[in-house]
Structure formats: C-alpha cells, structure tokens
Length: 257
Image (cartoon, rainbow, N blue to C red; front, side, top):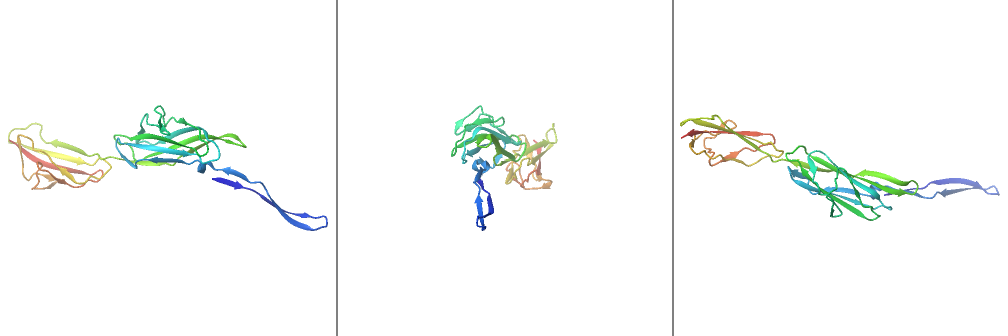
C-alpha cells in the first residue's frame, strides 16, 4: 500500500497592463509505502483443536511485496500456556534448523522485493491438559533503508492462531464394602464413572465380569440409585450420556460361594 500526497497553491497575478489573472500550481508528489500491507505476515495452523499430547504444525509466510529490501530479519513466536514448542522442529524455507528456538528468536535471510520466506514449527498440547484454548502469534523485526532517515527498524506481529485443547478423559473408580469376608457373605460393589474431560460422552456400556468364587445377586443392579432388575454386569448394559463434569454410579451385589 502506497500513500501519495501533493499540495496545490492557487493565486492571482497582475499583468503589466493591470489585468489580474488566476493561476494554480501543484507541488511534487511524495509517497510513503505502508509496510504493514506491503509485507504480509500470514500465520496458519494445520489443526483447529488438539487432544492431550497431540501435535500441530504452524507456519508463517512472510512476503516482501514492497519496493525495498528487508534485512536484519528476526523471527520470534509467542504462545499462551496449554502447549509447548517441540524442540528441533523449526524449518526455514524447507530446511531444518534444529537449534532454532522460537521463544528466543532467530535470524532469517534478507528478502528482496518479490521474495518470500516460510517458517514452520510444531507445538504439542500438554498432557494432561492445562489450559484451552492456546493462542499463538509471531513477531517479525526487520530493517529497511529510508532515503530520508537511513536505516529504520520495524516490528510487527502476525495474525493470531487459536487452537482448542480437548480431553476425552473419563474416570472409573470402584469400591467394595468389605476387605475381608467368609463364605455366604455379600459383597457390594460401587463404580463411579465421571466425565473429567472436555467432551460429552455418549453410548456408554458398562460391563463387570463376576469374580470367580462369587455369584451375581440377580436384581441388585442400581444406576444412580435406581434399581434395574433385568440388568447383569456380566453381559453389560447401557449407561446414560455424560455431560462434561457429570457422573454416574453403578452398584451391584455378589455372594461368596
């Protein structure tokens, strides 16, 4: 983008014979190139969400559409909590740069008008999940020669990329009412299933093989306190869907043979 500007002066002048005539004069045109628009810095990611521990590749394409060379380029990247940079994953123009650190920053080659440079790197979602979403943007520092000012330094950010971090975690905690028993005793089992992730859980099926040395007590199954006389843990049965943070409790009895 180039901003152009010129001024105009309107005036009258008087001829020797006394006539007064109008006239005007334009100045020269001055231009200023807005490097924000002439040097696009476009950041993209290959995924919009990550499960815990998964990775995503991010890319930044820097294109010099200006009329001047860009030099002293330094690239840095900033990411919020919830993911980490994968060490050794940086590439510049397709060439691996294993020692480059996006946080500390690294130099890029000078860009003549019409040239572009591509930086890629990999991030990995924390496992276990610590935060969602993760936002990420890069900063490019560079220098140009301004005819009126000499070397001038600029610093601009890319667009921001956002990645949701998701979790499919589910807990299943089992308890029994007796640590010791004798023949003929009844053991009461309780399983509490909790949706501790960030995604709704559907189509849940509960199974629990009846322990050797015991016999299932028919009609003893309860789900969230409600009795289901036809249910048998050995063959399995459906449980209600679980919203995020929700839990369901399954109970049943066996008799020691």
